[in-house]
Length: 89
Image (cartoon, rainbow, N blue to C red):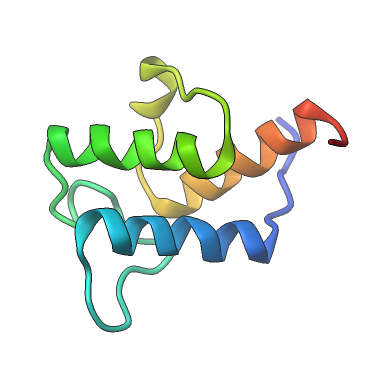
């Protein structure tokens, strides 16, 4: 498996979307925060979060792939990998 290099701008945007969707004040989550366990996002919150991420970054996150994204770092890696797969805009 190829290691995905994280883009700091994508990391920042992922954290911003999470703070907005889950209404987190203050310093908020880190990339190591687990969406369900640490952030307390239930299934409806997670659905809203992934829809907002799709809007922010474009494209779709298939349900089976979304289920494997446990931490915010996983989400950022996923977005970075899809950006690379899509090629230059």
